[in-house]
Figure 1 (cartoon, rainbow, N blue to C red):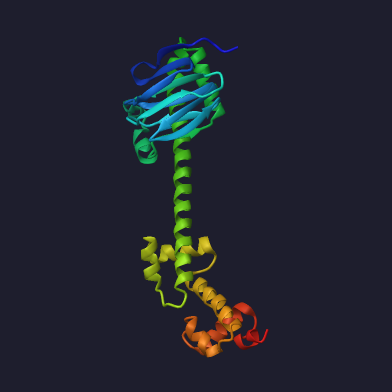
Figure 2: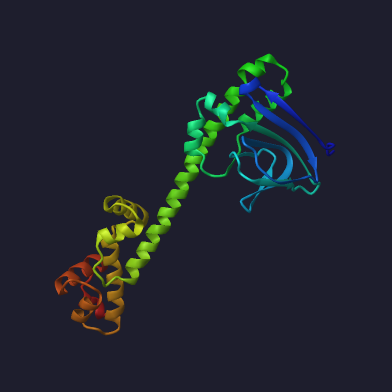
Length: 271
């Protein structure tokens, strides 16, 4: 049975605590708005849809969202019944500062919002709400709850930022490998490639090898060999192929080709 629509605010922990909205909504939509505090939204039942910076995020029971201060967002019920039960905790930056974690929040929480699932935190949050009049809850539960949630957030944010960085680096290395494929016959320096990737030569060399599996020079040699095979199949002489494929001289071409193909260019041309 779907509960009736209701909403109430409660404050936990006095001045250094948090304000909590406990609500059950039916077919309700929030207009675009923002809060000066960190907004921690916990979805206890039903489904909702959040819009931040023009992007939509579906949220369901068990999901926790954290929206930064002054971030414009909007939300609405998204289940078939047009219903969701929601708890919103509003944590002032001053509260985080008194808990010694505001600087970490400023350092790590760069995105406008984060979305996590933490069953233990949700369980503890429900406990706080059930015992909201208890002095024990006021003194010993609210601050650890805040700190536990933000520590989880810091870990999640570091992971997301790390994965985002790795994805960007991989994309950059693939672009550079494509550049080497297109310009396989040219002499391209490590410094030039590193500048393209906006990395130091040492860092670029390590990242390229980790991503592609070969050093840039070895990768370019492999591309030259593959193109040399095509030219040899077309009937070109070894001398012509060595020049066309970008090798320094005939002996370098033969040595490199045999190490990668297992036979000399002339033997390959006879196949």
